[in-house]
Amino acid sequence: MANRIQRCELLLETSRFRVVRLQYLLRNGHLHQREVIQHPGAVVVVPILDDGAVCLIRNYRVAVDRTLLEFPAGTLEPGEDPLHTARRELQEEAGFRSGQIEPLGEFYMSPGILDERMRVFVARRLEAGPPALEAGEEIEPVLMGCRDVDRLIAQGEILDAKTIAAWCLFQRSSNASGSAVDHT
Image (cartoon, rainbow, N blue to C red; front, top):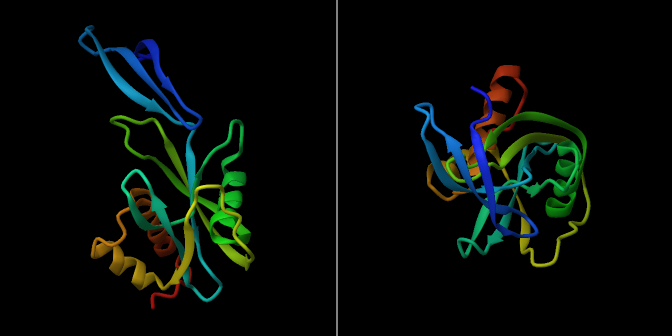
């Protein structure tokens, strides 16, 4: 079926997203409307050190008023290539530059209310340097083994959806390629 959206009304525009009311055609021919958030998209990076350790970050998230464990991530700038965004966010949030960065997959964050498409990358051959945090960010890099990531997800200590989804894509990729990953 062709594009089913009949009308788009802007309700709110911010520097990072827009809220719109969409009127769309149902398969039965009736019109319905729903409010959605339009987002430019984002990336999440799974940083793997040469010794197999994984780099996550502790990141204060005001929306939930909690510090969460998550992978480095960030929003695409207008016209920015997702690979460039991944390299930028890895350096800004974790302080690493990557000698090898590859796509792992992509997914929609919450397609019931949000059109944000998240692209996942794995970064290897990392070189450490200083982070370059943006104003308002409270981020601290944390290194751990793969088993620790698995355990923290299983125990509900990692609650960030993009981190859990990215970890699943990384694990699937690692298992398929037979690549050596430290599971300590």
